[in-house]
Image (cartoon, rainbow, N blue to C red):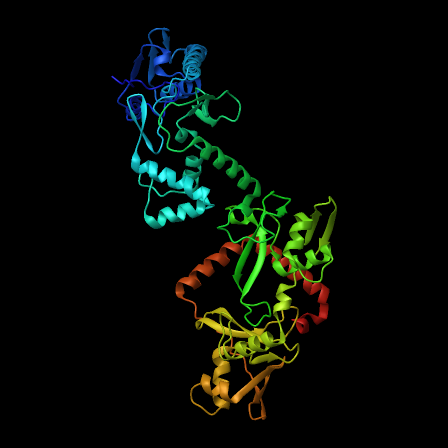
Length: 539
């Protein structure tokens, strides 16, 4: 026996007994399911047909007593779909009748019309709402903070610092605080049908934005907040909503906040501050720029890029006709700025006119001042930053094109892995590469040491120039020069094993077919005829 008590048949997800029955079917414990009627099995046509088809694939028969239908019969599914539609519409009709009764009670001002809903600050005693003093103090404090000019974010941080939590022990967040400020229940009055279920089958709940009438009932319970205070808070919230980020004094805003709009996603640009990696730049230790707010969201595909703050202010001065940027003048004259694409800004004045400005980001070029360039050059000489940097980095140069040699890793049959130094020019330079271990042996002999010494190399050798024929011109720190010949290592071929020889022999036998032999014989005869007497010499 599987029975769900007081649970709607329009959705099978919440029916625990129904799910248990299906699980037993999957385990092979059931051969036949007997049910009183289609409406007892399911009131959702889609769920019913999907379940019956799945059970049919498992070889399980479903019999409906009232309708006298067998799911395994030829016309069983057709009759099921027709009668299930009636069952679903019957459920919809029952839902409409229940809703009609609830709305009539709402019109009559019955407090329990929408059930015993949960509201912070109150508890139900029978059919009456009674104030919880401890929670009511928190509600009053939320309203008072808002009246004092504090933002919801400030209240959230204040409660977190003091360890104040919700009834469930969760942290107070912006959405919770906003719901408290917007809930008219705290005034001792009630507003019914703020939400409604749009479809009795899917049970989807929607916020009532004018689709259905709302019912306002006065003096239903003891208030926590005065009605006049509540109305003032709603007006203030509307005013702050209109101002946007400018109304939130807890944010670090400027005159550009909320005025730069992205034409691609309609979101305002946000100020972004990061550390300036070029500390020698004249702009200070921080880089300020403006980026589209959608960049903060996961999966952003906005094509716009950041706008440097100094370029934005320079363009504003051009539009306003001022030598220096003035926030007050900007606020008085500019209504908004839109960004249609990267490198383009459209300035809309409050008199209705619009001006377009184009710009190019030169921040990377600007940061390379002479002072910073000299410092970076010195750092690279003493501490090369490339991944495979050694004491040889930037010391080996190509005589043909003047480029530095770069270190590269190459598999080697002899060493397993060998390091080579090759010219960084990739467009046709024919200068030979240098294997690092042989180069170090050559340098050790040049510096008259048994083993190569990196410190000795750094202190005595200034630069090495490589010529295309393998000649190395080595310049020492004392101004002397020596030329040496670099002899590449002989090509190393590891001895082949007996297994490898046998394998290659089998491969060649497989390729050297009679047809291949005949083809090669004919080719050789043709070559001898063409060469004539010069065959042996050509050979």
